[in-house]
Image 1 (cartoon, one colour):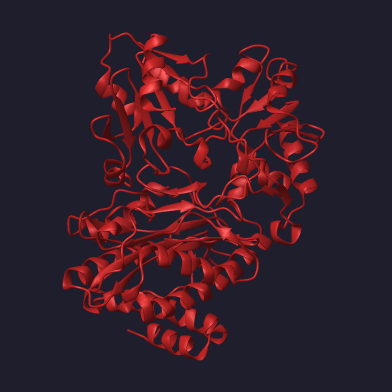
Image 2 (cartoon, rainbow, N blue to C red):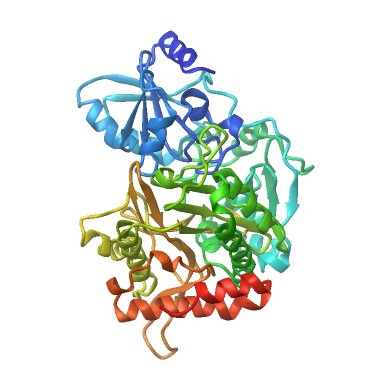
Length: 564
């Protein structure tokens, strides 16, 4: 479908506008290329954004990560790029009293989202499009499921189902419909190859109070799964308040399948928090996955230092993949590698392709953000690397970002501390020099699941509570459009650092084992405590990984991890 075709259909059906997201029926999950309607219509390849299409124009709403990228990838004569949220943009565009009809695909928006839009904008008629103008929702690719073995998951499928059945009984329900693909994957200890980087099982699960489960999925090679078209038949059987639904995760379309508007009970998914707090087996697997990932990154960084003057960004992507693929239990990348040289580094989520690929330049910075899916854990790490001789400005700004990283990494905080407060702690060293970054400071990470998992969220909007056993990234940055970008990212485990007889006090224990580039550190900007943190971090890397390296790599690591 082209943008012009959709605009003609909007005109034909007398809509004022149509909202398009990157979602399909599995809300908030990644999508396959042939499911990405925003890219199909505009060319924008970012992982987040909302497109509002009118009969004569289109507006692409993005956050700070994608402001530069969206402008580069779209045609400004057809698409206006705005740094805004849908709510804020609607408030600015449609004043009270202006009657407007805006259509949307009810499979691609949650019940809660549409309810809130209808409440906030009473003069806008939000229409669940009955014509399926933007179908199909799901790729015809036939996915193959496989077990996530208990040696990695730590808890059996039967145990998890028993826990959910107990929850259903406690809430006086007959069943609960789980619509988040990562929830279903975790619950059933199943994964699949449906997506390139995220091994989720794309299915809905109807779990009854006796712990029995019915799967609903299309294009999934699993005999016991019912086609999605049968979901309505099963949901019609529920009388008022007998079915549990998470309004944030359930597509608005599901309400049309119920016998009455009161046929469900709104309850947050009990899986989301259970999944976020990793069990001891998962935590051990995640640690060992980061151990192997660290070896692969050190292999790569040693190679890069010998070869950067004769390679391109795509060579970086290929070589890093090669080193990771040699590691035991490797499954694939956890997202497409961001290998951004020089000015490309200022495009927060830049990913090189054949059209954008450039050679690595001398006396520039390389921003390298990458990760892997191992059967025992998921990794995500960013390093900013000096190629040649960095400028004083580069060193100064890198050191500020490093101070921001350490500020949060070394923080202790009481229970119930919000992600908003922790985000502010990380930004303070940059704020002191009137600098900032237009993305969150940290996101949760799954265990052989989504590399972005909620909760937790460390951002100006992160209201979730961090708990011991959660995994989060810590990734402050700084970007100068047209010049370079800097980001430093480690994954960390939230831990209770108090003694048994003391009130709980939480903190972070780093998981990522990849040296920082000391050529970019101005130690005279650092406090004594910050120097101690860096030296301890590097000493830990040396002690854990040095014995697994070739002699030349070991010599390189010894220099990279030498005390400041």
